[in-house]
Length: 340
Image (cartoon, rainbow, N blue to C red; front, side, top):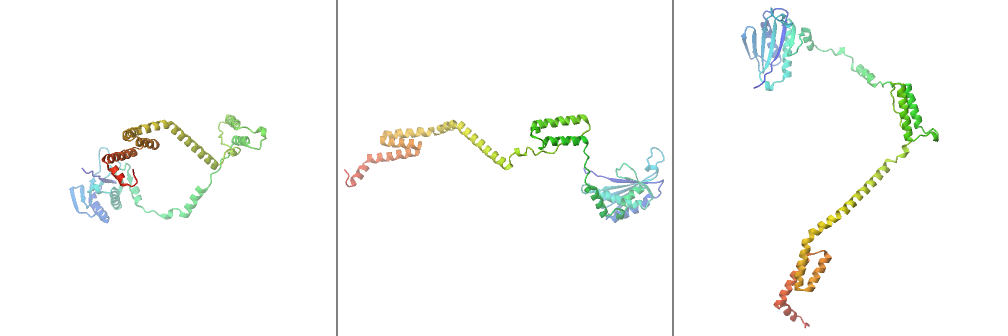
């Protein structure tokens, strides 16, 4: 269900207002037409209520009589005219535009009728005629100061430097004492160590704070006596980089030494099946030919176990034995001249 928001305002009169709707309807209709909302239909359910149908709104005018008994407020001392503005399309309604339209209708009506008070929307305070009409008054720019004078005044206010606070005698004493403690003009026998100087400053602060409770102590200017004790920033950065590299190298060496047994064990476990296969092939080759087995064992020892070489050697020996048993090798040797 759409929520319909009704905007309403009440105009108060001083005493009875005979024929109020007769005079108010033409004023409201003319004001609405000036802002592009022509009245399409007019209905009057009773003699004191009139409803105006527009293209986007429904405007209701209600004439309420003066209350002669019971509780009365300041606006009910005379007749009142209530103007209600109801949007017909709440989802597409602009509240600010609707409020502006209602305010313009009230302004056009108030200037033509003897209205004494205005109750605007849900505003808790009652406005007088003059207060409401003052919103629509034009502003005379000549009453304001020219921009050049305003700029000069602001410049004078913001460009004036703040006055420096006058140091108290106790602050002067503290600053002078701290400067003497940091000064290099003292004789060598009077120069204090950093710890002794810090203790002397702390004791001086306590003594001055004890003498005057409202003394605000301020720090002494920085001393340059120990500035030569620090190396330049370039040299410090270079030394720091070298130190970091040394620490990283030491950490890598520790990791290698700690992880070496583990890596050797894992490598041995990974190559265990390959070593077993090489030994098995070498044993098979030894059953066929001892010289070939010796060659395969030597190659496996030098190259760390080459299973591919052992397989190739075994295949070659198998082919050679097959040819020898078939007599092909002897027939080929007989074809070669100068062979026994």
